[in-house]
Length: 196
Image (tube, rainbow, N blue to C red; front, side, top):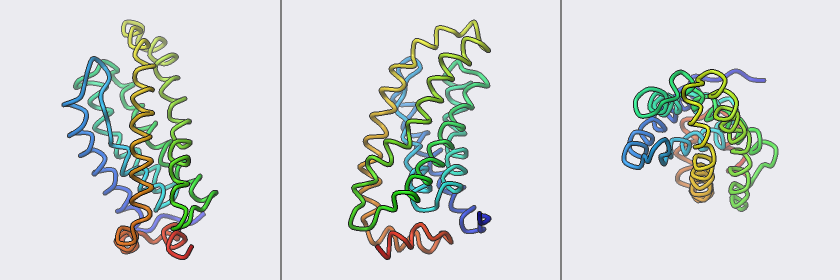
């Protein structure tokens, strides 16, 4: 396994920062109880698709910082368990990178990114379910009522992933975007999309 280059590291952190910016503009205006739209995973998916699993996981962990703080302490009641958001986004970034490497969608088959992105959310969905159904009642017994939010949170998250899967498919097929990213990534994932 190769080590991350400075370019890859910078790209991952930059995508994580963009994820936090997206969280800032999508969470606060849309929150109802403990549920809010959160499109901070979009740059995580881009990082995983074009940079690979490690870049995607790092971008996911960084992109989850603001949502973690928000759902943990600022607007939510999860406390330290709010940082499970960073873990979940890191899982999705890792899995989407692994799936892209395994399936190898080509420039002419970017439509394959729709099921890849949706499948990459399955482990994060399991993590969210475990967080709310196991860890919240166990570690925050006074907040056990939060477990009731797991279904609306997962339904909202699947909607977000469906929207983001279509967007990533469109952007992956855009030659200008791929050329732009080629300047920022050392990894070969983007070159594979170029050559196919």
